[in-house]
Image 1: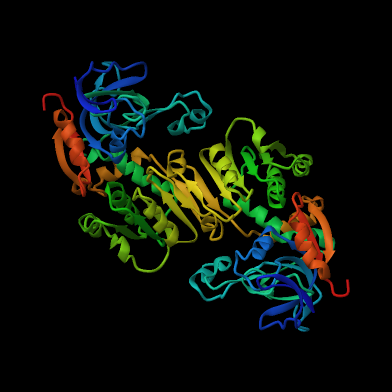
Image 2: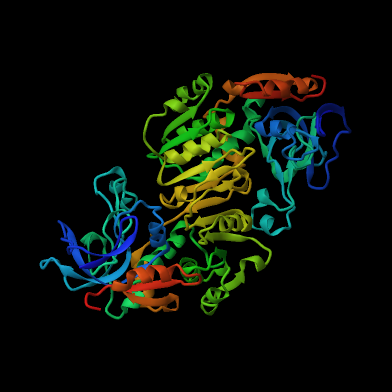
Length: 319
Length: 319
């Protein structure tokens, strides 16, 4: 099979079809999404070598005796060892020897086939189109905000950052009934949030006032600065994005107003699939282009253009 | 009355006895404690001008018609405006126009008399000696850790910093049944924690392993560094101490392991008074010396000596 492989440089490379091991299935990938983390992989930040990609929807193609055979699926991306203290405490996502699909020691989704433990799979309802289901992983990451900082319907919440993740976070927060504001730098992105009940502002024009919860999804130190400036005493700043570099944190900014800074990462797939199934979240406005996998290098370049939200790869062989 | 006054320099100064306003009482101060924050005031960090001091125990001396008259009391140190949005939400401790006893716009406790709203008072039971009750405020601040990060009896907790606050935090955490470790630089301080069920280590000798909760009470960037290194994935770092300067925070250190960083400050007086009343916490080993208020300048100098935990001032007139 031809796959999009990274080894210091991205290449389209002929590779053997993966062989599922014990407890694993082979997934025929339909669609895969290019994430900002994939662009970081290109810069070498994760030290990853292998088939790229972790956002996907596909269909289980093997083994023949799997109860999952023929089922369309999304898949959780972290593979725990199952025996360390964290796995045994139900924190497999933080396993000390974890593999991560397309990010750490496990070939990813920018290929016609991938292998994954059956335990990682979530069934996709037949009525959910692939272009919806491919957003399960990023939408789950957005929903994780609601686990990190329970949002009441009377809360005032600010999301900082109008990229793909920031938009999805603002959408799911608005579903809670809370008053949700989104601050960003791209009027054309902010426009995607307004029809979903989100009040939007260019960051420089954010009106005065503070927020019960601020979600930092901008991927820049200035976003964290804005978040810490705008959170109310005893409020919570949820940190979703990483970036290269350090933020100069004054401890008094947390201690005196008793603010919490909560890191959060992957989220609940089942909740994301329910919202996609029920039409509560329509991710299609995020899609900028769909490239066939064979043009994967072009797709990676396209995903790095300013203002591009989501680029998808069609990974079906022969497409 | 003679009081310990700060106006760029600490001085012992003759001042008029304070006049309690509406809703306020006059407290005759028995004992007051010198806190690390008072030493920061000396360096000008808080921009404070007035009578210093916020840790005290005393007796209500006026007005004559107060139901508190003659009652021995401890007092919460923050005075809210009562009308701002935060006061109305029950967050008077974070009032936007707050005064703070001996720290912000309100004369403090290093004097024979202070004034305070009656709403700030907590009665001290007759069986609690003054040398216990004067620790109500710092012990409440230690108890706040349990509100910031609920500690289960099966938790492993590390306290970083073996100063007066770190020791009190380790004591109250050990009362929860949790496994509590204390890391510091002073063998003679660590020795005060061991008899209370706390395992102690010189910071450089801390054995491998991570913790569900780490409390940073060292007042130094290296303490926060140790805390972030030793907290487990999805664990909590409670920040108790501020210091001048900035910590270079790598956002990935919070986001990837989904760690929470929780600032916390003042705490529940009622709980502290119960623990002191019932003998669950005996603060006397922390006391290094008691000076009469007239020798307050000497006391401030003494409190800055290395290894000194707590210096008290006897504020009764004529002593």
